[in-house]
Length: 116
Image (cartoon, rainbow, N blue to C red; front, side, top):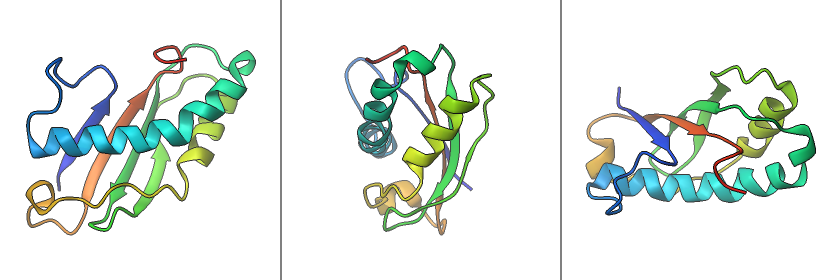
């Protein structure tokens, strides 16, 4: 099992350096495009808190076993974030990142106050 964390502020300042970091950055771009516009529409109902998604990505980019593993105390934020992530399709997982595993286990943390 391979586990990656995609945190908006975690990648080095020089940008992605390894195949894993590059994939994390690509995945984060897709996730941000799915989630951030919805957060922007409801900023009046969203307060600070980090939403942590845990999921599995198959080689073709399909996301499965999606769940929120953090408790922000804001059920609206958590449910809206989960809806935004359902059905999302990420870039294909490169063989160099996947290795011999059938899928990639990922965790992504996002905070609505980090980007507006």
